[in-house]
Amino acid sequence: MAELTVRCFTLMLLIIIAVWNTSLFESCDARRGGHWRHRAVSASLSSKKTKSHSGHSSHNNHHSGSKSKPKPKAKSPPKEAPVEPPVDDAPPQKGDSKTYNVLDFGAKGDGNTDDTKAFQDTWAAVCKVAASTMVVPSKYVFLVGPISFAGPNCQHNIVFQLDGTIIAPTNPKAWGKGLLQWLEFTKLIGITIRGNGVIDGSGSVWWQSTPLDDPDNEEKLIIPINKTLVHLPVPQISPEDGVKMPSIKPTALRFYGSFNVTVTGITIQNSPQCHLKFDNCMGVSVYLITVNSPGDSPNTDGIHLQNSRQVLIHSANLACGDDCISIQTGCSNVYVHNVNCGPGHGISIGSLGRDNTKACVSNITVRDVIMHNTMNGVRIKTWQGGSGSVKGVLFSNIQVSEVQLPIVIDQFYCDKRTCKNQTTAVALSGITYERIRGTYTVKPVHFACSDNLPCVDVTLTSIQLKPVQERYHMYDPFCWQAFGQLYTPTLPPIDCLQLGKPSSNRIQSDHDVC
Image 1 (tube, rainbow, N blue to C red):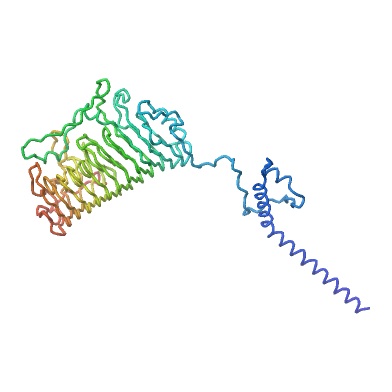
Image 2: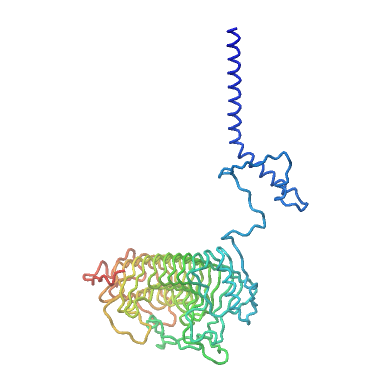
């Protein structure tokens, strides 16, 4: 009897353990299988969506499935469970890319109809959508008046796809009393202009109808052999209705107060004044662009930088009537390389310090540049009476061909007929020239530094410049108050550079220091 009782007790215990293990296994399987079953349901729905062509939506199929489909539990699925993708007709998510063509907003593109309003309306739509694209299509010519593509309420990373041609109006009425810019992009983040299109400023009507500005200061150093300085005539094209254009000439394309700006692929030509300007911008990239205007078009700088930092310019062809690239006050961390310049006035830092202003420029690199038939090569120009500093400048591997003045520092810059002598100046230091080679037609080196604040730490390495007699008087290298080092012999010898540092140098006040 006792033995029977023990056997019964053992059997009951085994049954209890077996039941407990089975419950435990099912419980674990349910927790793991939650994901498996969810995937199976999603796969089933996807399969039904693929197979169903009878007009019943996947939504209906989901609720009218077979009896074998398990009922969903009331408990919400784990957060990590995959979510079924939205159907194809779901509304676009915020930030989705969109394309807006100016033709769809009423632009004609016939070169005669004023398309300014269509461009404004297109921009208004583009402005609302992040990473959207405004398209100016190829094979059309759009007549567009002065316009501002403005933020700061626009979404980021907008693309202006320019494949057609935009031309400026030549009717003086379109400009009122005069404007400083024609096409302007302001207060934007992540703006890109790209494409194979053309921006044509119709500049010839401005060049001939406004008085010729005073000549560049360095023209005073260029004396023809016949002793007569002759300005080449500006192309003559009569403005509409015989009315002169305003005396204020606009820049063709200007960016102001913007971050992460890119300009690539396009051509800018015949601007009334400067072609491409960046003012108060940070993070600028310009590459594979072309600037094209006659060498005698007045004040038509190629690229003009002012109060802008972190700038990269490369792989560009620049031909104009003034500086190919002009770097003004407030610029730092500018890198220019692989640029073709000419005709034009070369690549310049300045002019700086006009009207006794303070100018600060630092960390500028210009290298791997080809210049042909330009007035200057690489130049720094400042006015008397200014303050501030230019420091940390490298000009490297510059190839010059028939350039009048390849290397210039001019601290007596004056584009007026006369300028008052003043003692204060923008301080220049840490200016390096290396591998400047080629031919010149007037003077190889011109260093004219301030009497009270000489140029210091000017270094020259591998300078090889040969004269080519053309129609100008030729001169030897000139230095005034320029101090530094010659690290290699130069051609011609630049014996006028004073080695070391000046014995006395005016200490800048706190007001002068950048």
